[in-house]
Length: 254
Image (tube, rainbow, N blue to C red; front, side, top):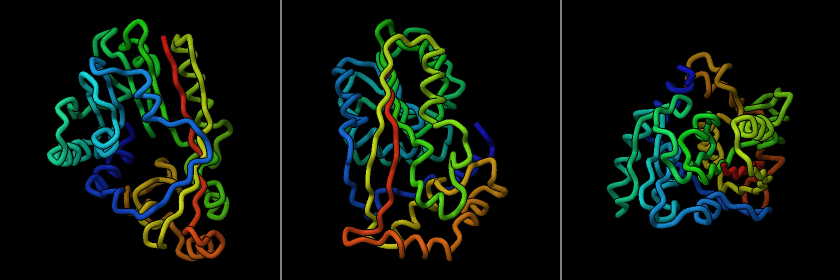
């Protein structure tokens, strides 16, 4: 994992996304958690990659035999363990691990889930059981595109290939036999300018980690106040400030 990326997430580890006031409008049917629910039961052994502060796995992950939830940031895992004290989930174990350098025995997990994180498809293939499943939700290149166009930059803005296509090709080349890819469209409405700014401060939507000079301080510099105000003016609606999200889902089986 890149040192700049590690330093950045270490600095934002204690920030809670749940404090951001935002309403969502789903424009497509595919749902990450529902897919996990379809492919698991109360005895399943699961691996969740890039779990962050643990909110998603603690609140929404279906009850299984055990889910090992990992993140490369020890600060994130500390936050997740603290959050776990508020839940009665005995089936979740948080572990510090770089998901690009996994060290699990072959054929161990029934399901591997990965949301908004980098993966090593070959290592995932190796650690899955014979009929194991990989489920991914990721942020595609066209995510928040109107904002990226206005600022003239952003995560994946200059890429020649969609992020979803790169992941799909890696999964195919790793040996998975049954693979489906889904486009996920969501409208998000942020109640105030402060809510939208809070998102931009926590998520690298307007930058790429290769461009960050000084971790969080460098990230902060990418948010031009003048352009931010212009975006608010253009996309403020009765429902809130609109941000069009473009995600992708992939379900792959051995």
